[in-house]
Length: 48
Image 1 (spheres, one colour):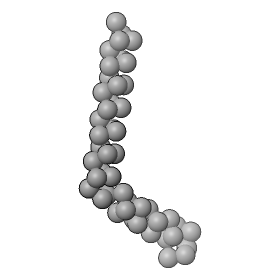
Image 2 (cartoon, rainbow, N blue to C red):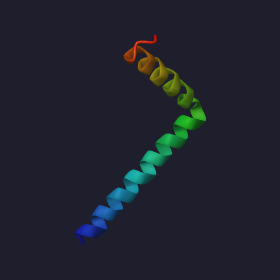
Image 3 (tube, rainbow, N blue to C red):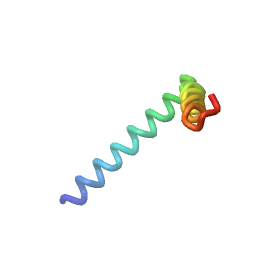
Image 4 (cartoon, helix red, strand yellow):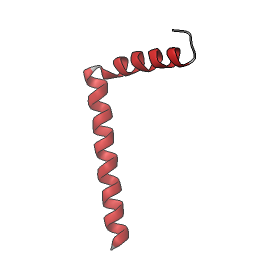
């Protein structure tokens, strides 16, 4: 019984995370995140 509940929670979390990723891709957030991550990376290694 405990494995069944654990597998259900894992499946629910997987569906929720995939939904959030798809929503972000559709709304254009991927480019925003990439731009911010590149800026932070450049600052960390001293190029920015």
